[in-house]
Length: 245
Ligand code: ADP
Ligand code: MG
Image (cartoon, rainbow, N blue to C red; front, side):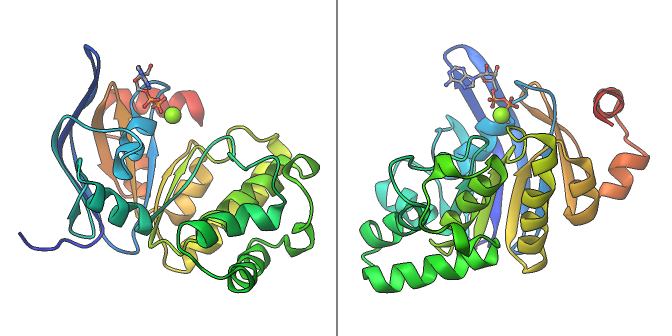
């Protein structure tokens, strides 16, 4: 097998019990590409991206990350998780740890990076998301937008090649969305490979190389943003766009 870089899905299927939640999902993401995934609630978007780092397991088909198959082998899963960062809707910061410690805990305890070096790295990425001054506070002392930027910095501290975002702005008050999107745009400009589940269509137009629309567990449409927004081919896509734009 050739070592395809980036991410590939080949006829991936997943069921929860008898519910078929991913149906023959196939697509690939080249290194440096930015993909936006959208679609109605319950269409399988979270499940799909969670399969990439094996937070969920698929039952048939093949997923690869930089040539490594995502399967039940511990070695493969570890190798994939090293390369893939994830940012969730609800930030998932550790409430009892300071911002700095949130950013150093995995590098120190998973990667065995010495404390001083991990802290230096954390400060670098906290500067990158423009909140170095919050390093010694606790998550509850920060706004939602700041917490989400910490979550992004924390993910960057593991130096992933790929970042997955699962509706990173949908838990935020409207006035805090922009600061998180700006951070994501700046990551995109740095060449990070990104898959973003989001309904922020302005963001999709600005950074996506491709927009994937899912419905009922299947990819219904996949196109460059210009085409996707101007000439959606499928009725279901048109309906969806008419509801969110
Ligand atoms: P989306 O992110 O597009 O809203 P999800 O991937 O969360 O969709 O869910 C896809 C389908 O799978 C939905 O019908 C959802 O109810 C179901 N589902 C998600 N997680 C689980 C789970 N852990 N157990 C059973 N069903 C689930
Ligand atoms: Mg979801």
